[in-house]
Image 1: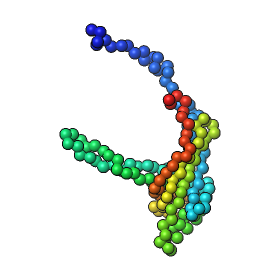
Image 2 (image 1 turned 30 degrees about the vertical axis):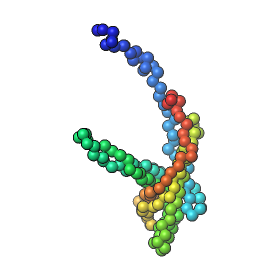
Image 3 (image 1 turned 90 degrees about the vertical axis):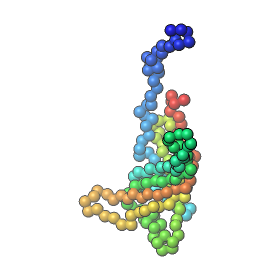
Length: 173
């Protein structure tokens, strides 16, 4: 081979020995969180929450491109959705549904979620969802064979902020 086409040997063992991995303690404990809901200026500690998941979804358009057999994708907006399961022991959301039924007033609220696990160095992450709006809800429920009652609600939101973010894990940068 001439000089220009010479391949250099790479010491793969060197890279393998420098493989940095996450420490198990840096996995966030699933139950160490706080959830607050603010409705009409009243802030409620939603300690009865069992789980919550919030999604940010990009809305995309397929773009035809001259000279390409495939289409491109362009983000043209976004939507925020969420789902939460609670112990069935509060009437707060049911009262919002009744208020809408009686007055036609659609009530919006904010949700603040903080994850913090003191066993690691990640710190806290707080996400605030603004202008949340219920999609549905359970008015009444029982289960003669169950251990406890819970309920799941779906909602949308129109804006979010992340005032506190996790620290970077060692080795990420």
